[in-house]
Image 1 (cartoon, rainbow, N blue to C red):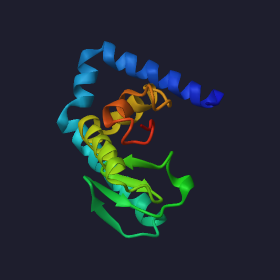
Image 2 (image 1 turned 30 degrees about the vertical axis):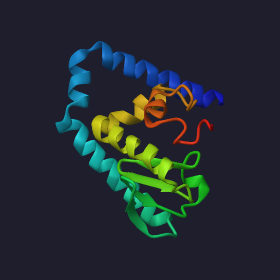
Image 3 (image 1 turned 30 degrees about the horizontal axis):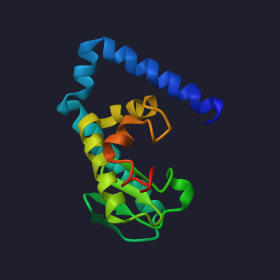
Image 4 (image 1 turned 45 degrees about the vertical axis):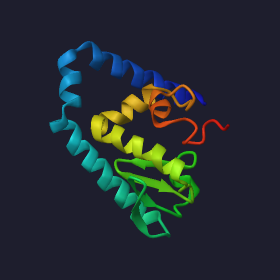
Length: 144
C-alpha cells in the first residue's frame, strides 16, 4: 500500500478512536434512525453507479443487488458492495454472494459510518475485521 493509503488509514483510525471514546457520538452514529438512512443513501449511490457502468442486467441475487459486467476499474478486488448493491464484472458464485450479503448487513448496521470503520480496519483483507466476519474463504481471500 502506498503512503496515501496508509495516511488515509491512520486518519480513519484516529476518527474512529475519537468517536469511540465519546460514547454518545458512537451511539448516535450507529443508532438505526441514523444508520438506516445512510444505508439507503449508499444503496442509491450503488444503484446509480451500477446503472451507469453495468453492461449486464441489475438484479437481486444471493442477498444483494448485483450490477454485473462493470469495468474492472469501478470496484476493488473481485467486486465491491455499496449499501445493498454488489458491483462486479463476473464474480457471482454462491460463496462470493454470501460474503457480499454479510457486507450488505454491515452497511445496514453501520450506515455511512461503515466507510471510515472499514478503512480504519485496514486494507489487508486477511486482518480486516469486516472481511473476516464476511468469511475469508467465501470472499476469495484464502483457499482450501
